[in-house]
Length: 553
Image (cartoon, rainbow, N blue to C red):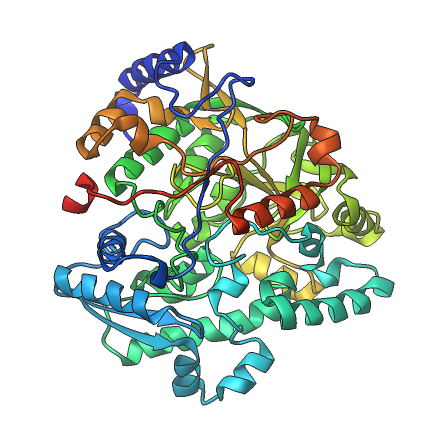
């Protein structure tokens, strides 16, 4: 953190924010309340839909990208890398990636996940699948489609992740439902964060670690969520996830076409103000309005965990939980968040608009949300939940406001601006032991995603307020240095334009928010998905490849 340069950074930030408000650099923005007009990249489902030149360019870009937790460029010429794949892999795409590695001077090999389990654990594939050590479809089945957008599914299923939190009369019913969901939709649709599922994932990570001890690889791309578990268990040889099962899974044609040095600078510009933050206020047009303050010590800890492999954490609780994996720091930063978080979509799918009310950094009550909200309220109503008291946390209870992930990649394959999480989350031994002893989770869930967030901060050095994000638009995209760097690669506005912007009636497209969307968002997005499939969706476009300076870097 370059604290000595902060006065200059503030001046540059002021200039960037002024330019932003004047509207001279607002690529893709329209008049409807200042929100960006919808854009939806046409999906390329397989390598067969690409020309040989397009596939070759896509692979070259992928193996040179060094930012994020799926960046295949985090391996150097002369090194040896292993790619972990699963059933259903697009082998033509895999071959193109391996050829691109060879052109870089990297020796690349691949292995199926079940081969690791069979060699190290001696467990046949069928048995490993039955036990949950392996998952049909690999990481894609766990991580909501393998890096693509949240699909048109019913979001209440996320409330089933933690059966141990439910009343006894519902627990067996939910466990049976989880088993059915896991069989038909993958473990992610069932209970990937339940302690039993976590234990099976841990067995697989242990097998991967042992395999790397036996076989002389400099790094591996693969594994299971969460990145912090992978960093903690595998160490430096884990370079990231292998998110390249299909062209669709890797975000189509556009996500790889963003220069990683520009993304690195965007993240730096977004997070470098964190040590100086004094107060935060966050709003959005779906009903969110909350704020919190931080002390200098809390802000310093926040800054140390604000960026982990390209994930930008704009909440002190969340950033501090990562510090055990990064530094073996034990503790948790809890802030006095008050207000409301609102939205209609989580990690699994959609639900009627939910409002989550916050007091002293915890969930005070939940309104709406359909079945998702009903299950959440059922869990909160239990007296024993209120008596849980995890290590490092100041108050009893489970539902802390614990996560705010901010999207900083304009070509990302999910259009969210931020997503929130509620619960706990810490891998320090004291927390892990407490959770196991009490048969409760040591992680969070209950997510709410948003698309048009405004994230405003005040620093301790000034009364002026800075909008890190305004109506879903990241201020860093207007930063003079970011734009200057992006100009090396082509037209700046095109480089920094979002590949995907969600359409929400009453916000950035005509309509009544509550009537046309908020009360039943799942029906709305299912109609969208059908139009996308038929090629009739009015906001659909196909990202162009053509010639690009990016391929020459």
